Amino acid sequence: MNNEFNLPQPNEIGTKEKERAMASYFMMFASSTIGLPLPFFNLIASWIFYRYTSKTSRFVRFHSYQSMLSQLPITIFNTALVFWTLNAVWGNIPLVSENDLSPIFNSFSSNYFGFLIVTILSNIIYMVFSLIAGIKAYKGQLYYFPYFGNIAFEHAFVNFIEFGQKEFTNTPPKL
Image (cartoon, rainbow, N blue to C red; front, side):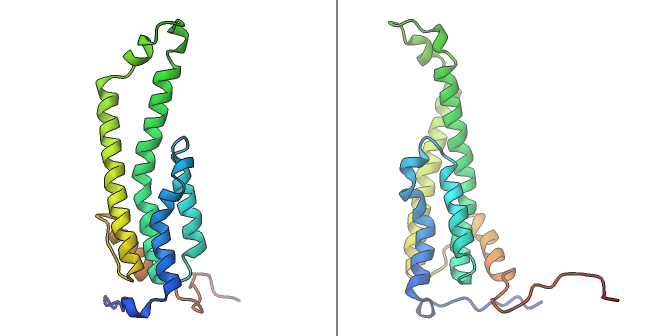
């Protein structure tokens, strides 16, 4: 198998492709108002965007797939934090009198605050990487996230079937 790939050069990529690649990273900012109570919304929106744009070019496929993959851990962290917070607040509501909210505040342990800090830092790091990747994508460049970049490259450039090519399936011969 040939291990050389003709990577698209910035001057060979159209403006529409660059905008789509950039949009795959900035979707998380556009849906952040809905994403707060429903942290998995960004992941669903990213998957829909990937399915819609993945056949346009390898460049767009790379960026949209990398964006979607990198949202998985962030979505897990945010979802866990939302459920942990709801459980801590609503799990203690029957114990609360009208004038005393201390049982609610006492239900947040040091583990909770540690996880909250890790989640906030993870979101900030993800936003910084996404901003950089979006800017690079708009310039027509590939930007590799740690870990997810290699997977996205494999998906977009190694296993990508061009338009007009047929996928080959292993079927028994016709009699």
